[in-house]
Image 1 (tube, one colour):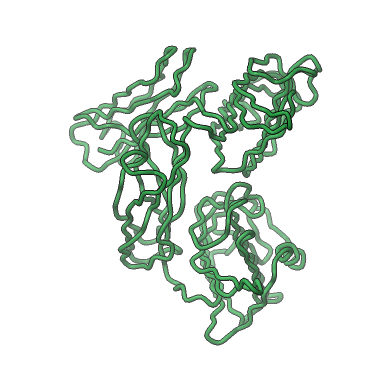
Image 2: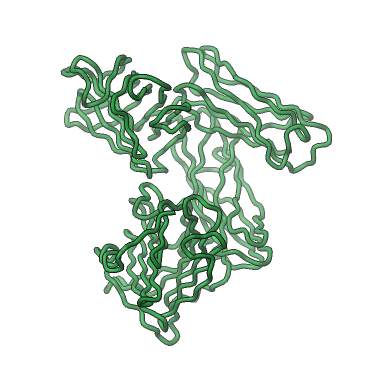
Length: 523
């Protein structure tokens, strides 16, 4: 792991720019404390526990609704720490649970987190944090109260650095429970799972539980989701569980809707963020989405398939009548260029023999898809423009295209689809319906295609085990032109115990996007 050496002076100047810094002395009755609890194997904390107060060093803190909270601790030559907590770009910072955080300031589209100190920092990190108390004096801009708990994993490791920061706050330094916010994708039939994190601020040595229930918002129970109540349980040492709510699938365009998940009835803990929610994305109406299907050997996509939506990062477009560029501001910062031959307008049609933009021959179309620090030196490919709506002033109201790109003119092709304010044709799979000794999954294509399409289906064991609780299924489904639904039957063995779960997962070898890729079978 790389040792991160950052000058304390440079770091302090960097995070104090644009903020009003407040020195935090030791004030009687107004505790200021930073607790770091590092698990064995965590690089940043070195597996040690620390309790830092103003009696041992100096704290600096700045915070705002737009920029988040930035904290430093200077214990002289003995010890120094820096902590950054920011909301996703364009979102406000405040009380709430922030999940799927990435290393600040490289967290485009996600919450930002970075805890480093004593010359050690993460190259990459994932984690979460909870803001349970945050008050700023509107007149002076000074922080009056702040309480943050966090969990950080370096380089994708399982060992965590847990921590808590308190300034003038009575939020307890014991495990508290919160509910986050999440995004679910609506399928075309049946139901699929919407899941929101219910998290503890720190590990507990004893079992903890909390009840939850759903509350209507713009999403209505029975139409957009199924009303659900339940209990979330935390075994000792675990900090993250999920509340699961079935999302209703159909082919009706409802647009994005949302509902709330509310916590109540805690046991062994207190609730600090009682209300979160789930936003339901609807592919039948206009969406912003980038689908990429990268086979093994493709350099740009790294051999994986991924679907990125505007819940993962901002989509920005700019262009002319000749073509346009789409920038996806997520941690990998994808850029896509689609241009007609020189002097020609970009219109709905298929463009063959594309070369790398902007170095293509004037008589050929230009194409380029790059991101995650990877790009082609030369490329060949093709793309099909389904729609391109641009006004005379250059404002782009909608764009839809599918593409194939080969780096250096040969090898496996990166297949993909880009949508900006446009519907997405896609495959989805439902949760299974249990019919006696069979679990039935529905695989849908919406809308239907005018050409043959293929999708792969396979079962994946979880608490239910292949060969013991159910028979493994691995097959390719062929959708003929106009076909919208295929059913997959998975045999269940008679001695399978109730309450066990396995999954049906779909993937595609081609350009057709996969929207909901996994469905649950609950025995």
